[in-house]
Image 1: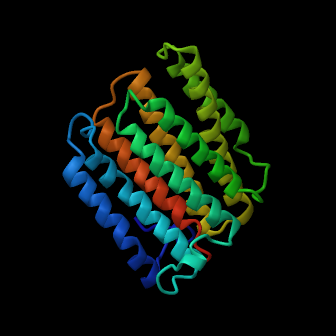
Image 2: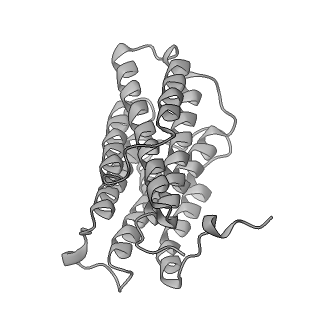
Length: 242
């Protein structure tokens, strides 16, 4: 079955080359630290290899902001483009959150807060998108439904409030990314929309597995969807996608 042209993404040679570190480090992490069952070991080595793919995407976003003209230099490491700059810092906070979540119980709240900052940055990076979207009410209902499903499994009022806040943030980013695609219709907006939706699915898998019921192969599914989401969001910063 052939994918319609408006939904197909063709990357340039430069874009592909700058994504090689991401795919290489993703593969290394899964080979070394991703068991079929259970979660990776709570070690500094796991932290190091877990955040490498995200740091590789930081390199990609910086390169994309400079039209892939050579390696980034210290005077152009922070993109001037509003969206690319916010997405870059969102990736950095995501990497910090990843490091915390290696220790799933002890550092879960700090990790949650760091990812909340990342979602705020993604939301800010999508400023300028149309605030009206036919899906706005749908995302509100989905967010409420997910929160109500998992809320009974959370045994702390403080954590319940934090999870509710984060749930609102991820669905707000999904709404804003969808609104951007509705208003622009570009392939960059399409990848951003897809990335935000996959990110939402990844986080919902975490919540359901932690407070709802056991999800088969949860760690692999969560990390695979998470890396795909971050990749798509990073691709959406490219000025031109074919």
